[in-house]
Image (cartoon, rainbow, N blue to C red; front, top):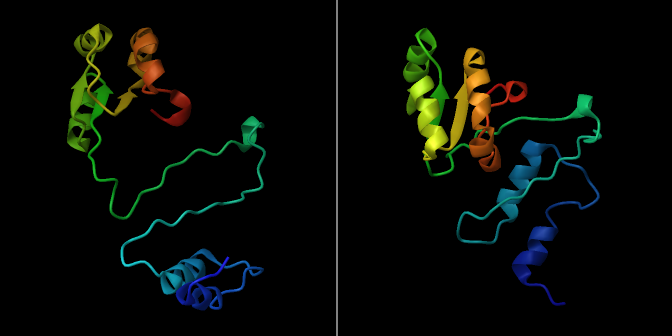
Length: 143
């Protein structure tokens, strides 16, 4: 297959057999870009862990520099002083028993759910509602 001049010039700027540091790799990607728009860059990392082993499981999040373009609505099951802390931290919906009843009836207009440990017993009843949507709070993940 015949390649364009821009493609051939870009390929000459890097060595396929070489392994680059992330900063250097991003520099090469920017230099070799032939598009006139902000194109997507895909990153694959080989961490050398076995995902089947529980002690090697990797969990985490990535903060994107410009966000995702939408704001997440956060629901917090908390009471008393913890409820005030959640409101101060920017939670959209905060409550305890009355909020648990609302969610059980089908109020599901939020993107993330967090609960305090003292309410996890009551929130556990919402597993059938929150679980299928991936919103059930989990102490292992810190929610």
